[in-house]
Length: 146
Image (cartoon, rainbow, N blue to C red):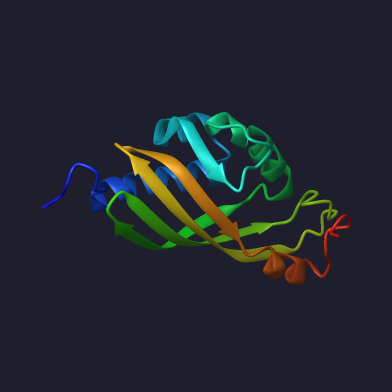
């Protein structure tokens, strides 16, 4: 039996699929269809802004840094209104990434996210990327890393 605050597998697969497709395609319009207007992204990308438009500067940076970015969803775990995702990102570093000049090297790294649903949309996302793996693959650290 599904309770009112539980996410069904079908809903999770549809919304999570569109969420990561929006990120891979840098598509804010698609992102707006799957997150709430007050969506929280943790850690915040650029300050304390809420909602899908906070990702516009991130998408602009990604379009330059990883124009061929692809996200493969590996696992989706559902518990009540929470959805956990394990995924893999692949792309070619064709532009500046965290201050690292373009290397034209292919990179692949893990991402892990937990999404809190409100109704049929994502209200909050906790997200982690394996940046250490990226820096190892690129052979350098960001210049401003303290």
